[in-house]
Length: 149
Image (cartoon, rainbow, N blue to C red; front, side, top):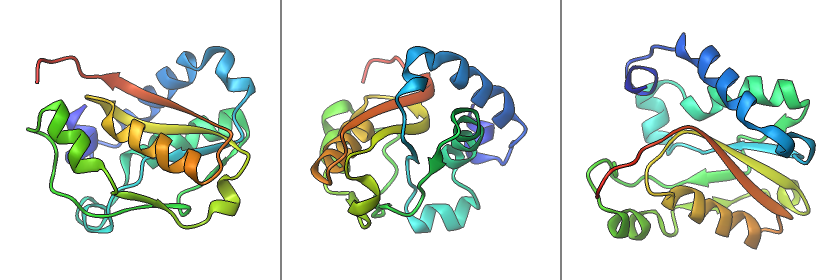
């Protein structure tokens, strides 16, 4: 998992996205738009790719829906890797903004990311997208980290 995210092991993308497609179930009938969880520009520049976007592409192709990578932007914040749930929720608040609400309004959106730890990122994106007029927001991740934090 970490090699995909931090070491450029992009060959994992295919098997990860296939597993995610398999997990969609009945949800696949309702999605209008896919939004990969955005990276801050500084992190995107350093890494060279957004792993969520790489995972979203085959899902979008399978569902025959568009990916929107430019309606939501993310401000840079330090890595949350060693923060507890409360710190993560505080750290993520206000990080995302919708810059093209007309693309979001009335849509059922599927958020895509690689890992979920506490759910703070998804909860904040849900809040921001609903405020921008999204009809419904769902999320899918490759893995869910379960740990005591």
